[in-house]
Image (cartoon, rainbow, N blue to C red):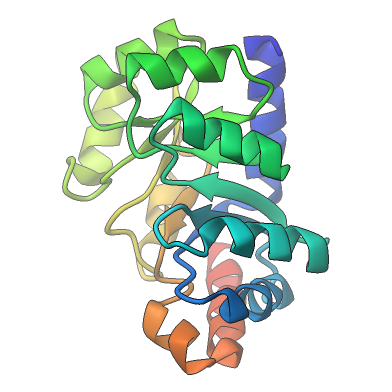
Amino acid sequence: MTADTRSQRLDALLAASPVIPVITVPELAHAVPLARALVAGGITTLEITLRTPVARDAAKAIMAEVPEAVVGLGTVLTPADLETAHDLGARFALSPGATPELLRAASQSDMVFMPGIATPSDLMQVLAAGFTVAKFFPAVPAGGMAALKALGGPFPQARFCPTGGIGEADAKAWLALPNVAAVGGSWLAPEAEIRAGNFSAITERARRTLAALR
């Protein structure tokens, strides 16, 4: 896949859902009800992080039983993780950072991939590898909105999905930045609510978030 094609596919994903919940699934039984709750609230692009033993099976279950969901794998750290995302049939993959090995594998893969950056040097490596959309992580500790505004000067071609420290109250302000394509965060699906099975609260929060963004 060419860099332009990869970028176009990622642009389409982000345009469809400007808010991407960062989801850590504690138990497999939670996966499908959680995905259905988010989709019912209008959020269809989901990042399932590879942070728990059930993450891969959770992603498979959601893809099989919630066809409206656009499932990506997050916390992709190695080329092997990227291959896992591809083999599962994930629509995209995200990483909190970007090693040379991971960038090389992603540039040779058909996976739509969003590498992570935190500094100008990180971003230069990502752009050199052909990726123009990056995950800015951890967004608030790495400098917040001021940092993204500053990066817009020397890197006008780059766009970002900031994640890390963003919440319901400030998501709209982040999205108002001209170089922000989408925002990500775990506030949409808190682990305590997932474990408690309080999926109606997650649906309501998704609806409220999207309404505020409009």
